[in-house]
Amino acid sequence: MVHELTWEEIPGILKIEQLCFKDPWSERMIENSMKSGLDTWLVLAEEGAAGYCVFRIVADECELLRIAVRPEYRGRGLSKKLMDQLVFYSRQKDVKSIFLEVRESNERARNLYRSYGFTEEGIRKNYYLNPCEDAVLMVCRNI
Ligand SMILES: CC(C)(COP(=O)(O)OP(=O)(O)OC[C@H]1O[C@@H](n2cnc3c(N)ncnc32)[C@H](O)[C@@H]1OP(=O)(O)O)[C@@H](O)C(=O)NCCC(=O)NCCS
Image (cartoon, rainbow, N blue to C red; front, top):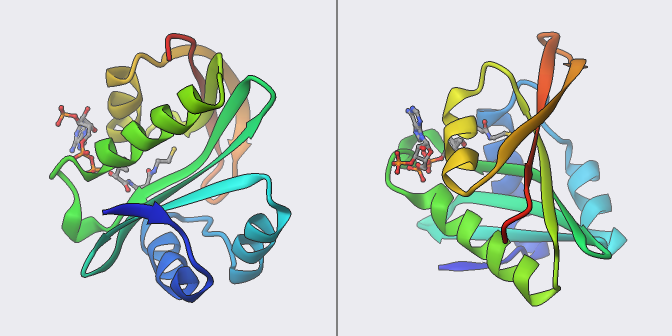
């Protein structure tokens, strides 16, 4: 059900980006991220892509860069399947800490992260644009 993103699936990911974020990544950004070899993209497939996440592991740290589930598939626990894989990959690579930033107003995502043991460790003032908003820095050290 969860698999690594293929090049053919990029249009589906782009669509989810546009549906889920006010500052969506462009096709080029996704392609560059894939080409970099630094990032892992995981897709959750239902009939086509229902959600995805992308994260970067460097040494013993992981950064969750994006996670999203299409609106019509929300509230069914699908984001947890992606988070489970994030934890699985992190354990495989002996990651000690997972970091992420989240909009202060994004209570759904903050609840999700808290349920995986993330704690709030700081605020990045005016980190986001469109609209301008602070980011909450969250960290999980208990992987
Ligand atoms: C955040 C997001 C990925 C959650 O996806 P989802 O598949 O609907 O979430 P799940 O059904 O797996 O729920 C997981 C947990 O998220 C939290 N959550 C989900 N929906 C919620 C809601 N409406 N209100 C409050 N918390 C909610 C809960 O903690 C939930 O766990 P629980 O069901 O045991 O209480 C989804 O809302 C989304 O794509 N949002 C837009 C993109 C985004 O904001 N990404 C995060 C950027 S940092």
